[in-house]
Each structure stands twice: as C-alpha cells, then as structure tokens.
Image (cartoon, rainbow, N blue to C red; front, side, top):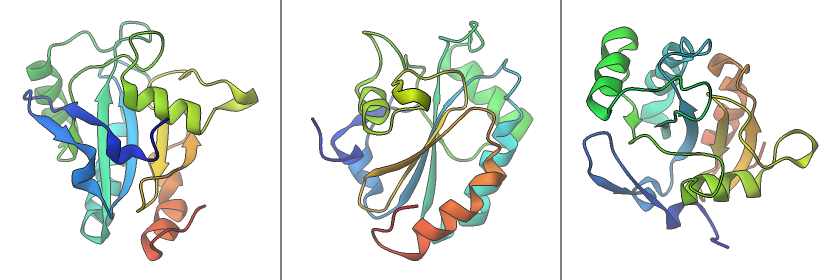
Length: 167
C-alpha cells in the first residue's frame, strides 16, 4: 500500500503525464467530475476555491469520470472546452478515468481505501465526491457529492495554516 498520494501519476487532459509528487507541500482537493450531472455547477465553487486559496497552497485536481449515469461522455478536448467555457476552470483537469471497480485508477483505489465513505464503503457514490489531502500527502477527509465546495472552506483553511494538520 502506498504511503501517500505522491506515489501516483495521472495524465492531464492534453495527455501529459503528471506526477502527483509535483504537488508536495500543497493541500490537494481531489474531485471526480462530470459535465452533465446535477452537481456540475460545483465546477464554479471548485474554481472559486482554486482562485481564493491557490496562492496559499491549495491545488484542485479534477478527474472526469463517466461511471455514473454516463454523465461525462465527451472526449478530453470537449471536457476541457466545456469546463473553460462554462465555468472558467483554471485548475488542473485530468483525463477521464474510472473511480470504481477493477479498472479504477490506482489513485482512486488508494483514496477510497484510505478514507472510506458512509458505513465503511470504499466505492465512490456519485460524481463530485471530494477528497482533501494535507501538505504531507495524507488523505484526511472525504466529502459526499452533495457537499458544496464553499462548505469545505474551513477545512481547507485549517490545512493551509499548518504543515501536517488534520481536520
């Protein structure tokens, strides 16, 4: 079992390999996203968190996923254009991945096993499940899809204030 999120990498929407170790020392908010979901308007709140706290060390990482009601059908270029045009998304978006099942991205296997959801379930329930990671790469909290990004502000601020604090 990996020790932290820094042991993983993923491809950006433009196909570039990004090692999560590039984010060492940052607080991360990892979110599985979708463009045609009832929660899609959360892109605006995620972008707001990114703008408000990016200079203080918060990095929002979006992982499009088509496993929930086929709500992310587009190709990488379509996803990127949608996010930019409709929500001005400037945070890092990655290639579409699976977050559940045998083909789940290794990062998501790690996130879900480290911080299970309600009743200990590891499965991601729906789009816009959020994971908060501290500056040392440890997963500290999981948020359900219906938790609005603005409601994470207090937890984000706590993690930004200290090197290894948990919330």
